[in-house]
Each structure stands twice: as C-alpha cells, then as structure tokens.
Length: 310
Ligand code: NAP
Image (cartoon, rainbow, N blue to C red; front, side):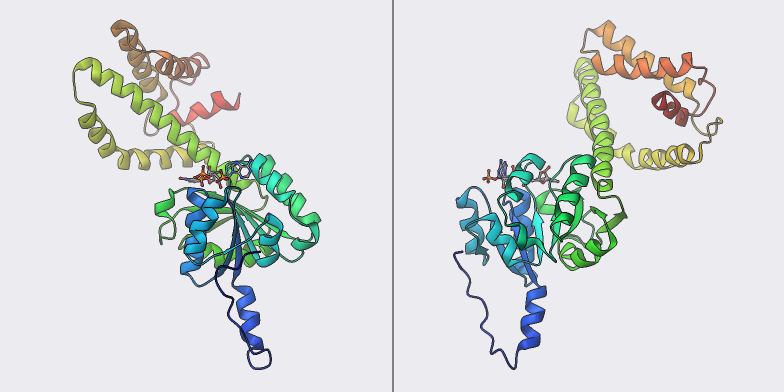
C-alpha cells in the first residue's frame, strides 16, 4: 500500500490511548466517483485517517493530494479502516470489488453501502458481510455531491442497531442528522425508489406541461417558475393524502376523485387535439378512468391507492 500521508508516529507507552482513539477514526472509501470522492474528502476534513481505493488509479491520485492513503487493492483498503464506506455505480460493481477483499479482513468492521440498488441487493449484501463477522448498513443518499456534509443533507440508513451505532460518527460527517429507518437493511433502498418515483412522476408531468406551454407559445422558463411556486402547497397536499392512505380513510374530505378524472381527461384531450406527444396523459388519464370504473369517483383522491393495490 502506498502511504501518501505519513501516519502519526506514536511512542507506544505514553500514547496508547491515542492509538486506540486514532484506530476508531480510521475509515476506508471504496469508489471515488463524484460521490465517493466527496465522501472521502469530507472524512479527511473531519480528521479521519482515510484509505481509499478506486478502479481507475487517476482518481485515487487526486485523493492522495488531499491527504488520503491510497490502497493498491480493495482488500488493503478494508484492512486499513474500521468503517468501510462504499459508493460505486451499482451492486454488480460493488459485489465484484468486495469479492477481491480477504474474507479475514472483515471481522469487527462495518460496511456502509451507499451504492444505489434494490432492497433485495441490500439484504444479500448484509448476509455476505455478516457471514464474515462484519456489520452492514445500507444507505440512500438523497442529495448531490456538493450538498453533502450539510446540516440538512438527507441521508437514510437501514440495517441492524449495532451497525448503526458503529457507523454513526462517520455518517454524521456526511449529514448533520442521518436518519436510521430501522431493520431490514433493504428499507433505505425502498425509500430511495419511492422518493425517486415521486420525483420522476413530477418531472414527467413537468415535461408534458412544457410541451403544452410550447404549443401555447408561452416561455417554458416562466412556466417552470409558476410550477415551482405551487410545489410548497402541493407538498402539504401530498402529506394530507399520505395520512389518509395510512389510515385507510377514503371518504371525500379535500379533493374528490371525480375532479381528477375530469382534469386528466381534459389534459389527454388537449394533447390529442393539438397533436403533441400523448403517452404520459394517456397513462395518467387511464389510471383515473380505472378508478372511476371501479366506483371510486365519489371518494377522496387518496382512494387511487386502491387501484394500485389491485
Ligand atoms: P460516478 O461518478 O459515475 O462513479 C462511479 C464509480 O463506480 C467510480 O468510482 C467507478 O470507478 C466505479 N465503478 C463503476 N463500475 C465499476 C466496476 N465494474 N468495478 C469497479 N468500480 C466500478 O458515480 P457517483 O455519482 O459517484 O455515484 C455513485 C453511487 O452513488 C451510485 O450508486 C449513485 O446512484 C449514488 N448516488 C449518486 C448521487 C450523485 O448525485 N452523484 C446522488 C445520490 C446517490 P472508475 O472511476 O474506475 O470508473
């Protein structure tokens, strides 16, 4: 392993406590893409002894300049840290990297997996880590690299309590208030998929709206400003409908389903009459038509969940 930053030298007798403390502040980061490199830099800034590994060595060199120790293999990085943070493209890459580590190097360590994946992948990786005597925590980062390390950085974790306790000091470097969702390990991935689902649904709606406005000869940047101006109150509405779904209460209270059945039919009709792309409104209007056909038109909008529950 190429030591780029000298390890502090301790006189064993008088600084024994210091060595122990230092050992607790060792971390390894596997994967130095945009996110992994940011995490490694945050740990360095927080005073951790950081060992890094990346497939492409040029990226490791940049971290070496920032003060990290560069490991020449994933196994060497795991051996050097107490908390092992991983952030690579996907679980296929993660699994391939982990298979290159020595099994004996994992005992007593905690693997914090921040690679995006599915709940099943997270749970399989937890089993792999635990079989080697390590703890496992799976995380969903809901922020861009430049937003990491802030008090309000959203970071969700799941896995066993002991893994959470062991990893918490490192997680607090990445986000002021990391949130533990509990067990099983796949919960963070579920939250990631669910929030992304909300975001992509909104973005597709935004893009379809942009086509409506282009057709009407209205500037799309002004439309974007109008839409973002109503997202705050829309967020309150989502919370209300979420509570009703959670409580299984579908009597009309705020927004009857019939309004949305008519509105989405209008959006589809306009797309067809004007000749703009109509796949998105066909899907949405179809879902609301299905709700009406199931006799839900006089219930609250939240009753859409009954269509999706099947
Ligand atoms: P990135 O910049 O594209 O970096 C990808 C990393 O994965 C690099 O270190 C790359 O190594 C490594 N990698 C890919 N395939 C590999 C393989 N087969 N074997 C070994 N290493 C491999 O991606 P990123 O933005 O850092 O994202 C990393 C993870 O964080 C992803 O799962 C992403 O969904 C998640 N995330 C990212 C963001 C964001 O805004 N960036 C936000 C939330 C979550 P090389 O350098 O050698 O190619």
